[in-house]
Length: 264
Image 1 (cartoon, helix red, strand yellow):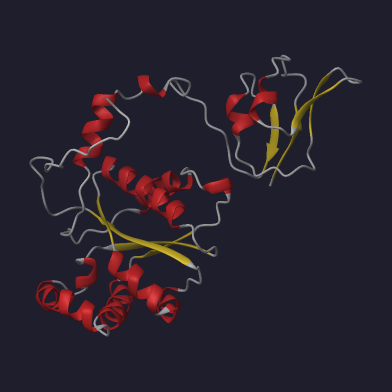
Image 2 (image 1 turned 90 degrees about the vertical axis):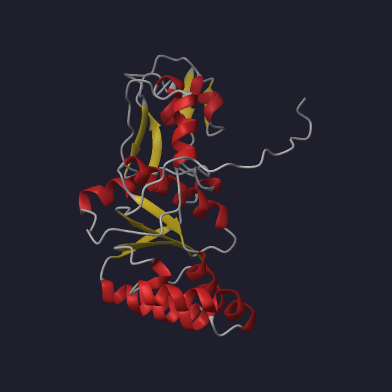
């Protein structure tokens, strides 16, 4: 994987790349901008995105995408539209039994791949569980771990008991799929949070419902052996359910306004 230079047949000499990344510099002897291909490039793609002539050379890092509105995303969707989409996003805890087709799931995963990460590390890995019995094994392991703590048992024990009478995999509300995002790095919860948020918003646009699953995340944190059930080994883990919702929402719930310090 590499960004390795400039296509001078396309390059117009605009010098934009000089402000996009310090690995570009003007070579006085050659009288042109050159790229330091041995420098500490983190493959963020800022230079590729900002070059008006598409003159940056790269390989094995995916394909850049150009489309109408990419330079003015506010024209693709207005603030009012985005605001309504965000306010309409809900946690779904009741799903239809229907599986989500692979081509639809791939759109969700592709969107998750586009999420930003600190220093563009992109160490996160994706796993999906779609087999009911595999989910059951994880369900039971999470239930056992959670209820092994007296304080958690006091708080969630009665709820789990009720849910277990309604759902086969009550930890996941019988969602047809469970998606796990893990990273070998510690302390990248923010990265995983952003990635899952991208996935949840993409799912919403495809008519799917999703829900974070903190029960699983807490259980794995306390008992890393649970990770073996789903064949992951990451230090940081995020989990959410996904499927076709069997519930309708008729309005966005109220949210108490926040006091904003420094804004009149």
